[in-house]
Image 1 (cartoon, rainbow, N blue to C red):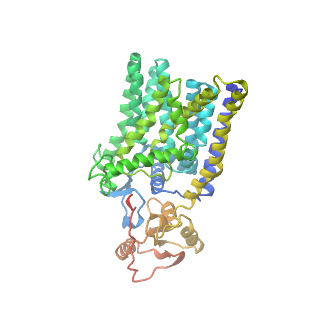
Image 2: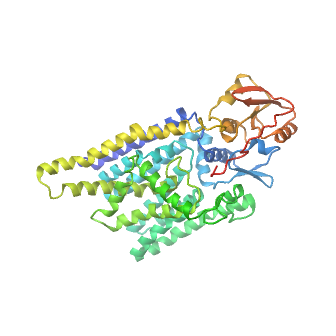
Image 3: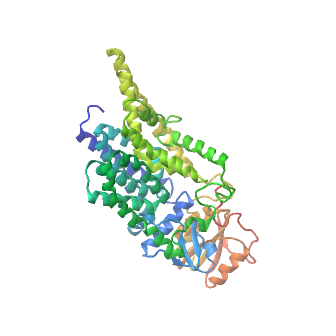
Length: 509
């Protein structure tokens, strides 16, 4: 890599980014059958479909609970998502194009381009290329890019914010300051907690340079105006600007500690467990190097020469890690996703760690030993990256592909019910899916029209009372059951069965 010119590095960066887009677009279209893995993704896609119609809410419909969508609320006669509007606005563009699964690969590609560009400005072309290589081979980056999670948008806006801060540090510019504040404000509309965490590390720069304080005034104005759209959005939906819509689904879904946080409270043992899980997950899913993923990042901070830039970069992941310990539930299915907005500092520090290690091994050695040691770091990196791409990351995708198949009562994520209904050429029908959880109805949920006027509607069977409510609300429709992989006409009286989780099981279940 030492012989690569900036021109060669730029072209290699483009090849890496293009390959990343190709892989992460191919995976959901093949392995995932274009079905989301998590209820969060189902809700985001529903919300994007809603925004694509130009609305932020729908009137609640009769028997709405049987046509429930994970994390979609029916309150005061309106149906809307609990999620902030930022990411769904991006995803709505994909809905309008007919390719929602393309949006995240493109968002990640733009973010990777900014990672390379900022790395180039900070450290030069070769180290920027190494950082980019570490980013495109990161399991958590690959998994999230192949999903419908909101992190692609938040990583892009975070990177634009970090790039803007670096530009402001070098040259005062009102336009750049406004753009940087806008990027942070959009991040707030996607992931508010993350956006607030991103402000803290900039304090190191402000303390270091007095003139930077003046440059940040337009930034603060742009951020305040943009972020104010979130309380306005909440006011339009529920009349309470400062209310977290998350608490309307689960009242305990909020940051903090004590008996009112989490389904069973959030206390010191839970906190310590989350600390361990966070470190463990980063040590695997950051680079896919078993037990070693954090090693180059740590080396980048502790090995000499130690400069201000290393401390500044490290402040981002540390701030996110500490702040997100205030959340009682930290899902690891997509890796340590609460810290993924700090991917640029992670990969820059990792690249610096590898560079410093290489320098330390080769400084002051005899020519023969120096020659041997000079090849040690690149060889070790090559072996670790190969083991990640050949074994670890495919294993993680295999887990996601077959996520619910061995979980009794969850149902499988597939198009079976839709294909069976279409094969029988049903007309003006409602098909009830029997499943303990939302997963068995996932394909039908995504197929339903937003206003439930389609030729075939898919509902979850929630018990006799809910069944009769649907029957009364849609008397002109034929009713069918999808149970144990069989599509049959509905029977009367309806079964007394009901699911243990009518909506979404709490995180502790």
